[in-house]
Image 1 (cartoon, rainbow, N blue to C red):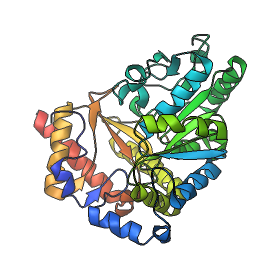
Image 2 (image 1 turned 90 degrees about the horizontal axis):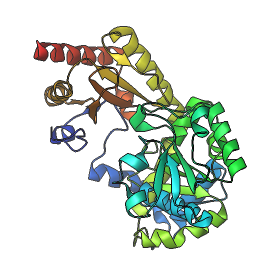
Image 3 (image 1 turned 120 degrees about the vertical axis):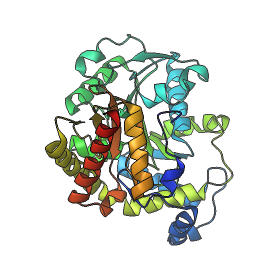
Length: 367
């Protein structure tokens, strides 16, 4: 493996069974899915405007309890627009972000290189921020951005009390609060709150369309009418006005119909799976607490060994286990599990068998 990620590994394309996420679709399967949507008969969109886009935006604004929402072909673009909007309004080019946030780690520092913003860290490595972290922030910030949960920190999710204290702090200091809610729906389940209760904490927020909702891609930025109107020009400047995006939009509407009602089931399945693995494999493996539909498993084997043996299982059994193999926190290697509809095809004994197979293969390889 040349890097930590192998989403596009050729072996994955030949697998029939998947542990994480929704079951991958072929190009033909994607087309067949959207062909069955009645919204396909609506007039086609053009450069960000059209009845299907408006329908999607209104549905998500309602779910999130916000005045308006705007579709973006990529969440990164929407979040950069929001951060620029808040920092321009306050004439302050500093933001607070988690050190392992998506914004800091997965966008080539776009907030710094494209917007000229300076980032201050809220929270420590491999953990969510808590109330004590709030009061170590600079007195003046253009915005605070919170990822719920922080995926690269092992899906670390702050508790509700910490979120309320952050909201109160933002009220007192007049600092806008943005939520990177790529996994907001799952976070709301874990916090035992509605989506709108969590979204109500934020002055602006982003939700992904292609993660738990299973769309082809894209995301939505939501907030006040003033915010949404205010980011329109920057959406264009960042290349967000695409000729037509109906495949993204129609597939997102499909996800709202079919995946959104099942989010609690996906989360419950994650909790059940983690409990099974804890019972069978701890303390040899370290199974993290579940946050929404996701958790982390740590192995006492080198990354190269876990990766090669996972790929061997993919080759031999046509079973795809993990999309990434990463540096562990407590043990040498960690992997992520994010439960979607692909897990519908598993039963308890199959899960136990494949993990026993993986662990025994790793043990044999290291002698």
